[in-house]
Image 1: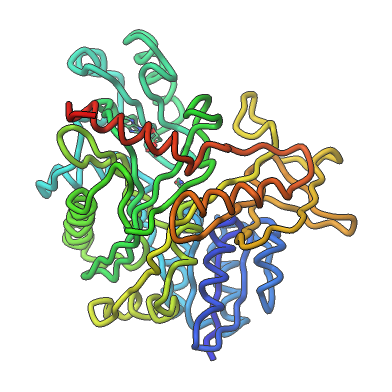
Image 2 (image 1 turned 135 degrees about the vertical axis):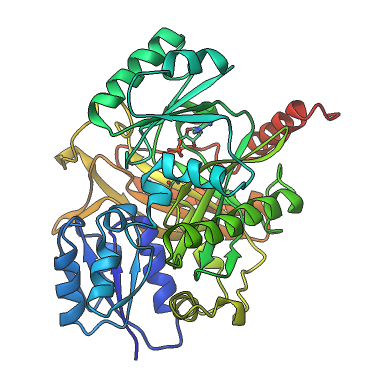
Amino acid sequence: MAHVLLVGNGAREHAIAEAILRSKRSPRLYSFMKTNNPGIASLSEAVRLGRYDEPEAVVAFAREMNIDITVIGPEEPLGHGVVDALAAAGISAVGPTRSLARLETSKSFTRNLLKKYGIPGNPRFRNFHSPDGIEAFLDELDGIVLKPDGLTGGKGVMVEGDHFQTHGEAMDLCLDILKSHPGVTVEEKLEGEEFSLQCFCDGQTVVATPPVQDHKRRFVDDRGPNTGGMGSYSAADHLLPFLDAAAVAEGLSITRSVAEAIRRETGVPYKGIMYGGFMITRSGVKLIEYNARFGDPEAMNILPLLRTDFLDICRAVIDGSLDTLEIVFEKMATVCKYIVPKSYGLPPNHPEVVSESSRIEIGETPGARLYYSSIDQRPDGLYMTSSRAVGMVGIADNLAEAERIAEAAVGAIRGPVDHRPDIGTEPLLRKRVLHMKMLKAEPI
Ligand code: AMP
Ligand code: GLY
């Protein structure tokens, strides 16, 4: 019997919990959460509520519960060294150490790593720790993106045309960023379509899962502010309508080189998830960023398709034997749509409060998978906080049917909720394909 500890409290972790419990290793699941996720709690033998910046609290719970394997869901505990603390206590984990998690927590670390080891995929970029030289570099770029160094919850990136218009505004933003962050990365704005390639890595071997496209913008047609992700889809052929096998192979090849480079750089093998956020552009696949964990929502697309025992994969990641395992995903299409409160992602940022008006009821959701995120279960029902509430996932032979299932499930929710009805629909998919054809100047 395997005693497994899961750290995290989102819909991504709800999907991970489900994957763990499908294992033939008779797992017993224990969960360490910042706030109680009723979906995860209902699958767990025991739950401990605590902070992700207190690694000792995670270690103490792991010791009490005799944990064999820990799976870390979000970036926050990785950035606070939870894996290092577990390792010091002799407890193995799927997830990188704090130093290796810089792949996500430091944009400049990752850009410099690719540059130093000659790995393709970087846009033009420079890191600055003071205002010196920023102005001149801004003038060298056609389009500009600014990235604060450090974790920003996916909302710290500023893109020319969206968040600022002029070089003067860009300079002011850089000065602002430098007041609260150790540095700022200034880089070339890329144009193309984004895709997420989540990979398992044991330090040596890197195995890709099917590519997924997330939808960061809050509103239909990719309008409005960036969010943590409003929903995502994956296709039955394990490609995407705008993405061929060669492009997926390019993303995987970059990730393999990065796994090797980070081992040489730190002397430590990376054991965990390497999630490359890539963009296919007219000049090939470029790297937007790495995350040191599964994507949220993207985990909900790929984990339900996993045929291979998830705990066998976890064991192989920890033991460094991924090369001996065949990892298989069902050839099915998936569409995930997040249910969110109407105020989600809108400025001014609302604190995570639960108000009487945020009560929701979930009716019948035939055929759909349902993953809880920021949901509070009270005696009189389910309440949303100000964040993403529930992920609805449709799985079918084709995208149209998967989308129909997800949309029907969204329709079963009663309450003051919102979602993006366009995710996974034919018109939006066609728009993505046309966008790429236009960029590559191909006939349409
Ligand atoms: P990140 O937090 O790095 O995922 O960035 C958030 C979003 O900003 C990405 O999903 C992209 O849409 C956009 N972005 C980041 N870097 C670039 C870039 N170099 N060019 C164009 N868009 C970018
Ligand atoms: N879906 C974006 C992320 O997980 O960072």
